[in-house]
Amino acid sequence: KSYAQICFSKPYYLWVLAAMALAQLAFQPVNLFSVYSAESFGLTMSTYGKYIVVTYSCSLVLAYPLGWLADRFHPLRVGLFALTAYAVVMAIGYFGIVGPASFGIVFLIHGVLSGCYFTGAAALGQLLFPKDKFAQFAAAVVQVLAVGNIVVGPAVGHLLDALGHDYRYTFGGGAVIALAALFATLVVYHRWKKLGGDAGYVAPE
Image 1: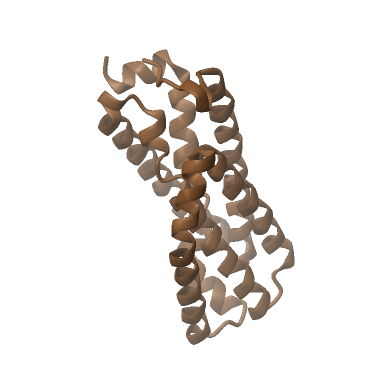
Image 2 (image 1 turned 90 degrees about the vertical axis):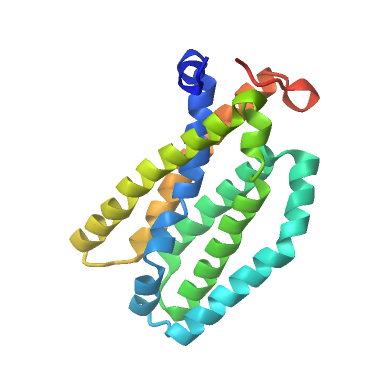
């Protein structure tokens, strides 16, 4: 069977595709408009650059511990934690950003938590998809994500135009998509446990 036939005969995989794609899309509203957001809240580009440096430095330091956590507790659990924290912080950002300092702090945490998801959940595909069709399923995730990017970017842009370029909505949008990703990942997590979980998960075909 092709991956498409498996997906539609096993809706579990549709949830996996949705969870993985939505999680990555959750970071897009802030990422796509971060320069405009920084300027609108009064953050200089020099300081913005320094926040970027700190963000990637944190990601570098956290990479090995996150890999250990993923191996120890499973990427699904690490992903769930990162998405939950991200949704909470983005909601706080939507209501709490009032100037350059608060923007900088929330933007920094956004970068660190998105990095935590990408690193901690990096092995999800390898662990959840059938091994002999992994490349097909991995390509399907990329296809779904590409369609999502085509939709999310212009949609957020039009929303910002309609709302007078209030860039707090990029954080609100990130929170909403993160909650959708969290829901889909929870569905995957519960089905993964029923399929054997830590003790003996075998990708259904």
